[in-house]
Structure formats: structure tokens, C-alpha cells
Image (cartoon, rainbow, N blue to C red; front, side):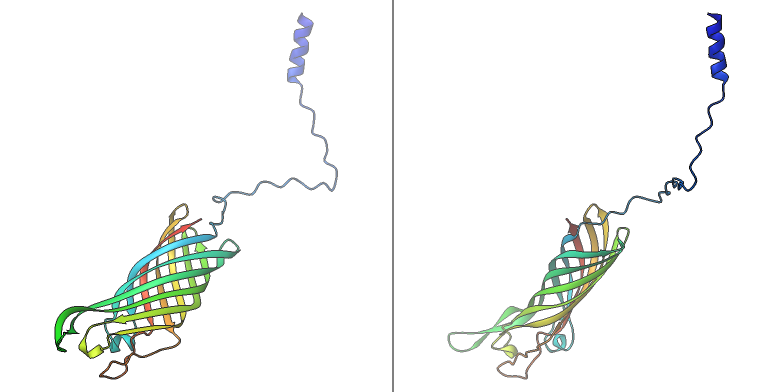
Length: 233
């Protein structure tokens, strides 16, 4: 019994065997790199957005036929097709926008005895627009800044019962060149809030000629500044 106890004590006090020598030329195992933050994960490539804000018509159309300011709403869908260094992205977008500009005016209608009867009326200038855009953006954390340019088609409608603008209606359809810029800040997974500035230049300008008066430019260049709500999926 005592001999067994002595053997266990000697084994416990023995030094561990030295490690086996590493053959010459064997590369050492690299140490793990330090982690500086969470792994970068690309955001989903497709997004849909809605916007609402201030629309403004530019001169000379806004001078020929006020008002200048109105309502602007829109929706867009875009798809990212390239991401460079998890920083710069390129994509395509389809944008639908609508602007309405109203002004209360004194109108007139013809009675059965062929006389003018004054009425309260609203001068309306509306623009519907669809455009296809090429986009480019830079993402820094939750902040995404972007630019876009492209072309599309605009439909314009003017209506008023004012005597000076009889026959009181004009419609036009024509091509437009478009540009946009904006910034979005993601505040939860896939959801972002931001602002956007849009500009549209009419490539073909048709004037409206009232029955008694000079030709007027009703549909010209316009822009908008709007708040933007975006969802990526």
C-alpha cells in the first residue's frame, strides 16, 4: 500500500514531457484577427417607397399661369444590381409622381340666354409622370445617400372656367428628362425615412392659346421636395 502511494506522489511531481519539435519550413498558425464590429451584411436589393411633399412649377410656366406651389406625391420601386466594396451601389428605379396645383378663382358659365353668370371656381393644373431612372448611392452605416437620372413620359391637364382662359381646358403628353437626389436613414430592419428632391424638364413644350389672348406656357419644368418612407425586401 505504501509503495503505491509513493509511486503516485512521484508521478504528480514529474515534469510534463517537452513538446514535439516542429519540422523546419512548417508555417505557423496565424492568430485570429481582432473583431472591430459586427459583420457587414448587405441590405436587401429591392425597395419600394412612397413620398409626399411640396411641388413647385418653375418659370416661365408658373409666371404665365399661376400658381407656383402645390401638392406632390409619388411612389417608386428600385432594384440594386451591383454593390461595390459594400459601400457604393448601382440600381434601376421606376418612379410614378403626381402634382396638383390649385387656385381659387372667379369663373363664369354661359346661361340659356347666352349670358355669363359668375361662379366660384378652382383653377387646376395637374401633372402625372412616369420615369425610368439609373441610380447610384453610397451607404455609410444606416445612412444612404443617392443620385438618379433618367427619362420618362408626362401627362398634363389644365382646367378653369375663367373667362380669360376659354375654352378652359388643355391636355398635353410629352417626354421628360428627370433627375433626383436624396438621403435615407434606416431606423429598423428594412425600414428607412428620408427626404428627396426631384426635377423634371419637359423636352417638348406646347402652349395653350385661349380664345381671346396670347399663347401661354402652362406645362413647363417642375420640381418637388418631399419626405420619403422606404421599405427594403
